[in-house]
Image (cartoon, rainbow, N blue to C red; front, side, top):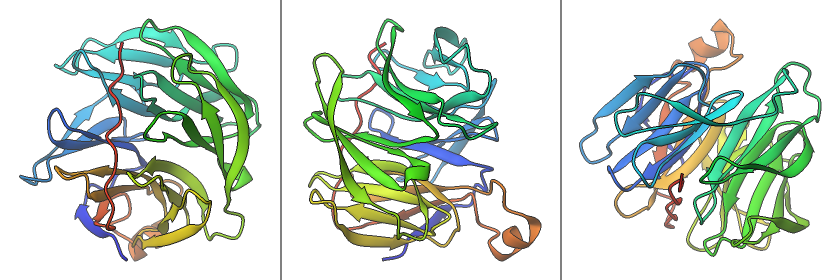
Length: 289
């Protein structure tokens, strides 16, 4: 199967995509462009919103508006998309790290992890932010957090530290938000790209965007790649199911670190792509704060 371009938005670094059933739009962030984007698949109308800083990952709030992980702070806003209020900090003692990938768990906590964009050291973490802005560390010694997503019952959390080229699975306690029993779901060492953002489908599969791999793959519950989506862009970054029937897989891409020759070959890099892969997805829970 091959994904097709649905919006030639040419994001510098499209990421963090999710479906919001409340307004019938797919939303994503252009991290390096400091913008949030939305697309209504029914009308084809798209919008973008300038942000005060890079939005590394974000989610809708149950109370309306958004929660956003900026590089070093987590903030919330109301439905007007203005008046951001900080609720938490991320690793204030390490100036080299920033927030990166994240999603809400099934109870509406934000689970997000960082990256060291200065040295690449494995000195950042994955944290849990609850409705009150309390922060708890779930995973330490991370280099580049990605692929955070949750099984439909909320009892399994998937995660990748990108340089490891594996997808991990953890037991996840929905009541406490604590993790345990880490195991390797899939070894992606022989794949053409690196594991970036992920989502799950209603049949228990994990869909992973392969950075610099030109594709998105589905990993079965048994840990086997059983479907491949070709993406006509070098750097897929994240994916999410959307549309009224949750049967369309939307894929963000990036132009980051691509030189002029590469962009001349792929002028639609940074665009939003989509495909109907034959399965349906699951809507993420809104942030409860």
